[in-house]
Length: 181
Image (cartoon, rainbow, N blue to C red):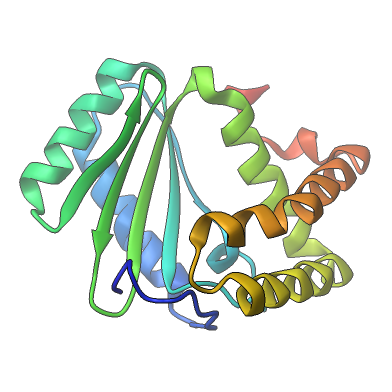
């Protein structure tokens, strides 16, 4: 996937398999302090088309543990590049030929980001009407902002906030992993 190409939405039945390979890679690279590895984003939600990108949310106890894991992955696979580092997060990206792999690493201090990604995924997996609403907004966002990933994301922000609120109202917080309780 070329990051300079316009955004397109695709359905790909092998995302779960790709996620399992990345999960294994992360578990092998991580030492103690790995709290969870989660498939998030559109490719984690059946029947929702997404960009050809696998989003993997990785939660750690501390920055040091997260940093060591990121260093191991980059050393073991030179196709991964390190981007967007902060005190509580690291982003690793592999721009593969046909898709991208994003390891979105966060410490527990980034609890809200971790929590929201999981709530969103869980709610959409079980609510077909919500999936259709989200898909409609995504398709409109691609139509209007295919050449600008930032504007594409902004165009979806209202529906994402609404769906998160619905997930909270429906009690989906009870489904969060223990480390977020």
